Image 1 (cartoon, rainbow, N blue to C red):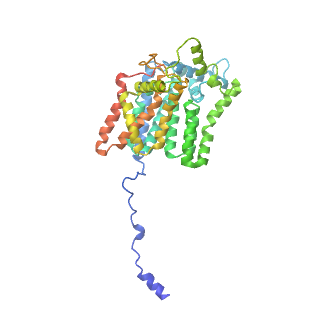
Image 2 (image 1 turned 90 degrees about the vertical axis):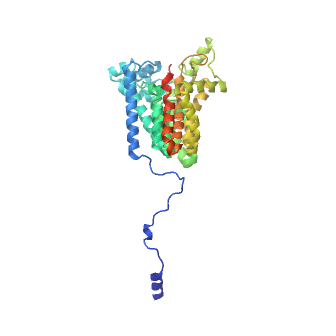
Image 3 (image 1 turned 45 degrees about the vertical axis):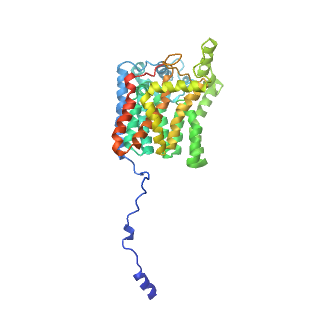
Length: 406
């Protein structure tokens, strides 16, 4: 016993071992602290709310809220849910998905707002601001840079075409909010959040249906089969509901796809009357050329170049999931043009018209993220120059102002 006591007294235990500093992280390792803290969130909130409110005021003051034909149609559906000869749920219709109309209907009860278009513009502007917040959150987490995330936020909200669609009764701002919420949940690995975001997207635009298998495949790798199954069940609730709705009211679950008022049926009637086929109809390269030109006109050539170059920076930042997700909306429209479901006309190519050019804005999230990634990847001594280059490229769209009409 005494020997053990002496040995314990003579043992060379280092003093203050519990107070030793932890080893520093390896150089080049990714930062785990939130860049910017609450100041970044505050800036993103102020910017998103201010730009969305300013766009709403500007277009309303000039009487542009119902300038777009589809905007008037969406607002009409929202109103007739409670004000028509046969008000009620069935007035939601069959082709256009219901979520934006449900939201607008609460504002359309105010008669003056309905007549002016504000009944659809106010919720659209709120959705646009939410899209900006989720965009900021997704980019800041993926790029570990508050500055880069704010640049991406500004490039998105200040695009003239996105600003207009985000301030009128259209479905684009609602889908943008759902899509960027999905992007944030994907980079954070939130299965439930991603499922809810995609479910909202599937009730807003058919683009959302296209996302489900790809995001599910990602969660198989990220969260295992159980996580992917949870995501799929939540996300698929929207499409399953809409199929059931069409089956119950129209005796055909695919009424929205090939029914009388579907895009497919309208196209076939036009062909029967002698109209030429849409550019890109069952022609891969022609479809890609049509979409590429529409993207160039709506986003601007400088931003398109910066976005393409920035994709490499995005991959260098190892934001593979975000990069893959951002490519899905443009891929959807390329396939849609090829399969004749979604025609896009541009004024610089036959038939030299504006028709559905707004669909090219599906590439805008990809391009602004690429530009933001260039800012995040730039050395500190060149960071200001990178910000100016990205912002200047994005704002060049205002010089020629190619409008996303018709």
